Length: 627
Image 1: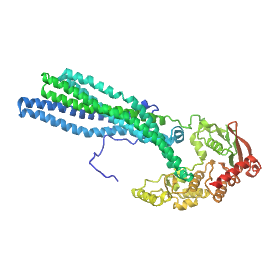
Image 2 (image 1 turned 135 degrees about the horizontal axis):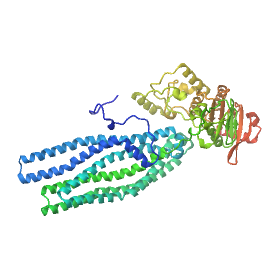
Image 3 (image 1 turned 180 degrees about the vertical axis):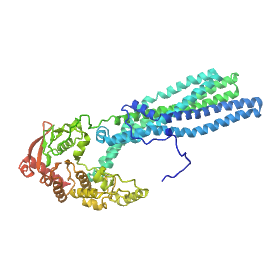
Image 4 (image 1 turned 45 degrees about the vertical axis):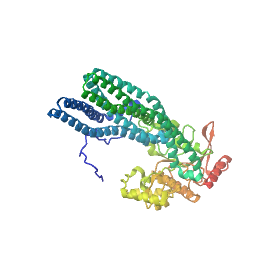
C-alpha cells in the first residue's frame, strides 16, 4: 500500500521514469562503461540540460533586468516606464522557480538511469558467477562496489546535467557582457578557464588518494563481512581479540587514507570558494572603473556585479563535477572489474549431439582416478583439501581445473545445463538460504513464496530480539505443495535424519531465517544434504556431509543414504569410519609429485590393514571426538 505525501502526475514521461528492464551486460572498461550508461540516461540528460539551461539563464538575466530597471528609474523616475521591466523581472523569477523544480526531477532521472544498471549489472553478474567473482575480488570490495560506486556514477550524471546548463549560462552571460563592454566580457571569458584550470590542478592527487582510500575501505568491508559470517566460530575459538586487533589496524589505515583525502579535498574546497570570490572582485573592480569613466552606466555596473555573483554558482557546479567525476571514474573502474570476470564454466566446447551416460563410470582424467557407476564410493586422503578439490573437479565447477569424463564423455563437450542436471555437488560448508523449508529442499521446482507482510517482518524482528538467532521466524504466503512434492521433501529430510528440523520449524511451510541461523549447525548440514538427496541426480558428489553430526545420527544418515542411493553413483569425501563402512568401495589417495594419485582401493575392512589408511581414519575419529 502506497501512502501519498504530495500530488504527483498520474503518468510520468518515459525518460523521467526508470524502466523495469533485465540487468544489462556492461562494458569491461571504465571509459566504455561510462559511455554506455550515459547513452542509457540520454533522454533524461537531454531534458535535464534544457531545463537546467533555462533555469540558469533565468537567473543570469535577472541582473540584466535589475540594471535596466535602475537606469530607467534614474532617467524617468517612478513612472509607468518601469512596468515592462518589472513584468520581465517577475517573469524571470517565475521561470526560475518552475524550472528549478523540473531540474531536480530530470537530474534525479539521469542519476537513476546510471545508478540502476551499474548496481543491478554487477549484482546480477555476482549471482551468476559468484565463485568466479569472489575468487578474484574480495567480498567486501564487491559489496562496496554495488552499494557505493554505482551511486557515485549516478551522481556524475546528475552533476553532468548541471554543468552543461551552467556552461550554457556562462556563454550567454559572456555574450551579454561583450555586447555591453568588450573589455569586461573578455575578462570573464578568459578568466573563467583560468579559474577552472586552477581547480583542475588538484584533481590528479585527489584521484590517487581517493583510489587508495577506496582500496582500504574495501579491505575493511571484507574483514567486517567475514566476521559477521563467522561470528559464532570466532567466539567458539576465542578469536575475538585477534579479530579486534586486525579490524583496528584496517580501520586505522582507512582513517589515515581518509585524512590524506580530506587535506586535498579541503584545499580544493578552499580554491573552489576563494577563486570565484577573487574573480568577482576583479570583475567588479574593472566594472567600477568603467562606470567612473562613463564607459558604462550605473545600472550596467549593477548588472555586471550580478553577473559575477551569478557566476559563482556555475563555477561551484564545475568544481563539483571535477570532484564527482573523479569518484565516478574510480567507481566505473570497480564496476568494470566485476563485469570483466569470466565464468569458470561455459558451453564453448560443446559437441552437438553429445550426451552423458548417467550410469557410466566417472573418471578424473587429471589423476586417472576411476569411480564406478551405480556404486557408493568414498575418497580418503591424508590431505582432506586435496580430496575435496578432486570432488569439486568431478562436479565441473571450473573448466580450468582439468577434464572429467562420465561414461567416456568429456563433461566440457556437453551443455552445462545437462551436466548440472546429471551431477549434483554438495560442498563441505552447508549453504542454506532464507525462505520456507520446502523451498530449501525442493529449490526451483516450486515457486518462491510471496513477499512477507509488514506485520510478519515486525513479528520476526520481535522474535529475534526475544530469542536471538535460534528463535522461530514469522512467515507467510508459502505456495501450496502437491502431494508428490510434499512426499519427496519429507523423504529427503528422512534420509538426512532431519526430522527434528522439520518439527522445530513447524513443518515444510516453516521459515528459515538468513543463512538458517534459527537452526543448529548440525541441522543446517542435514538440510543441505536433504536438498542434494531430493534432486535424485544420477551422480551425487558429497564433501564431508556428516562432519557436524554425532555418531548416532551419522550412522543413521550413512545407512539411509546408502539405501536411498542404491543403484545410483554416489561419491563421498570423508574419513568417518561410519560412512566408510557403508560404502561399496573406498579409494585411498595420496599426493605424488604435487598431484593426487590413487594408491589403494577396496572396502573399508580391506583397507584397514594398511597403515596409511588407518592413520587417516584414526585421525578423523580423533578430530570428530574433539568437535
